[in-house]
Figure 1 (cartoon, helix red, strand yellow):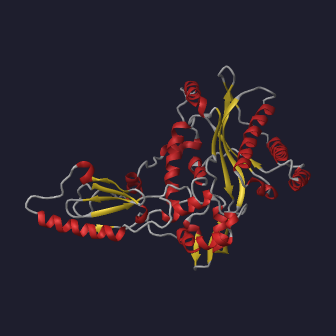
Figure 2 (cartoon, one colour):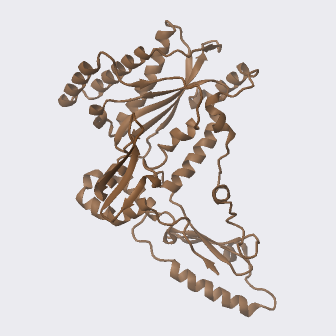
Figure 3 (tube, helix red, strand yellow):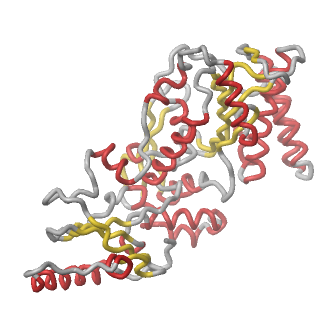
Length: 430
């Protein structure tokens, strides 16, 4: 018996791209770069046997092939794996006994177009960190302490349109030069908004100084927003119902729309819904397949772009030493900060077997017929062929005493299945 079902059945997102991607590239080549092309091809080929698989067998005759996943953040399934891996890393990183503040920094809509590249998104992140440092210095009247900052850059708004903004997790306190802890929890709302406007606009002006049209837009924005500054949120939440770490990482590790939000696709048009801000009302919209593709691919990050950054006490270069100091200072504190109750209380699967057991209660390496453990027989790759064979690499012999004839018939049957499934790869990334 051969089980050759893909890891998951085809979803609407993949279907939309498979139906329209080649034509979209011909009509809109300016919207597709190498990074976008590579990620889309991986996503469309995720879970296809023609892109490689591992084959497992049982002594009862059961054969199971598991297709390779694409490992792309643009893929909804593989994005979940990326999130789980990041969450597990963050559990080892976060100062769990230290209170944190969730700060959101937004950008006016007329400036969004200037952040469509890696350098400008890096500038946006640097401005956000500079803002926190300057606001703390102002509120402490020049007293210098170093806070811990985890910064996450998001490019999608609620409608999945381009809307670059920042989320920051900031420690409510920091260390001075003598490694003494000073609590800091007051963020002046007016100072935060106006200072954010000033820092971002001055940095933009310096970066775009040769673009006369951009300079005009920046000056007009300053005049319009000078009274109140840019929208910034730093409210302290008494009770958090969701896992803030997982929530924020989710938006940089997968496409900006979940499958359940795509309510219809007829081959030409896509229907989906979003939550309107600030009413939180459910709004349904309908766009062409080309519009939908353009909407989604603009959020694929350029290769090498870091959307999650660590600053101050969380900086990688000194984190180990700082964590020892923080743990020593808070060793008598038994309670965990309320922001991380659900985060630290949950466990994330780390491999394929754990993910299937966690999601579906199924052990993928247990034979569904007899309950015996499945044995890895072969690993096949479209470019390199058979990269592992139990007969070649482990010197196994496939026979059972007294049943050589039956085994030979089984091998012939399996080979016939293999010839059907090993289709040539047609210009797709592995």
